[in-house]
Image 1 (tube, rainbow, N blue to C red):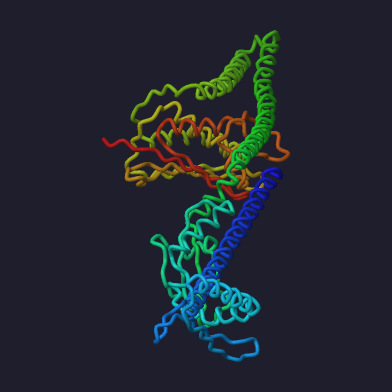
Image 2 (cartoon, rainbow, N blue to C red; image 1 turned 180 degrees about the vertical axis):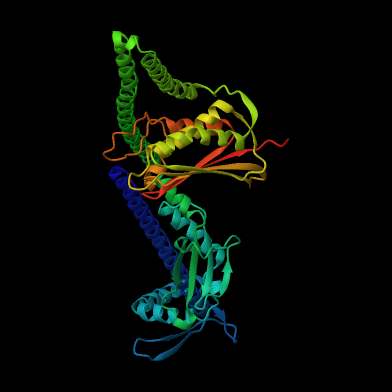
Length: 481
């Protein structure tokens, strides 16, 4: 992340540097354009003045038929003179005289150059801006100066007055107000009076692309660093998940060992009792030992089947024997059977079966196991300080435009924390119950419930608060007769 930050800052600084270089190049170009326009204007006035001088020195024919030269001039002291040369002067001699007089005039005006330039600048502001800054010349100067500064990209320009009114513009001059960084302004003829100021605006529509092209080479490095960052983060997440999975598997092995050890020990003890001659003489004792062995064998087989079922669900869809059953009748039978176990702990179970349409298409065995698992969890996670209360109810609801049956199983047990609710349907996950040794299991019961409800086309949700109880709600599609 630090490397990525450094690269981003480097790209940002490089962009700023390229922006500054671009702006500096444009400003130099615009300043050169205005300088050339001022030079053109100075040249215009000097040429105009020279043309006036040439007409003053041009030989002419006098009224009496003689050839002469008229010349009006002012000395450095401010005295005006009117010089007339009369007579039949040879043309060659006249030309030589003209050159000498013009040479003197040039030397004289060279001494008054500052005053002449001041007069030119003062008078120039009275000329129309379209004559002083011709659009064709401005465009030619702009292109030339931008190329001299290495800025070869499209541009549009306009000349505006001091209040923003456009005097003329190029055909594609349509700047966006949101892109002020692509607009550059230069004052034309800065020595003009403020009320006669004009400005040259130049807009670069592709400036952003031009700047981006100059830093494009950094993008592959940035992308590669970002990929490295994502890969590193994914590796860290997978490492933590693997660590968590390893811990859950270790807990699973410990729980499985404990679950298998209890029935095996009971069966082993019963087998040892069968070797006692006194036991063999008592039919009642033999019957009891036989019942114990049978129950513990069933318990051991049920635990093995749960592990095998979850393994099978990871590989393929479960093989279900679907049939139409009455949910109310089936749940009533389950609660009746489970009633003895609840009353053993001083609890009470209540069945409120209000669903009018209760026919569902399910696998009877798996559906029975789902309800038994939820009821068994309620007994396992009961509170010791209050009598256990279990409530099983059914009702009809409309969900997603279909009629469904809602089966609710609630208790007043120890409940769960909010962070546990998101994980209770994961395999091997078991909610921490503190220092309680009577709660056993593999962490597969609710994972099995979630899997089977999904296979039967239903949904399951849970609502729980710590020390207030837990409520599971199963919704299944009903079958219309």
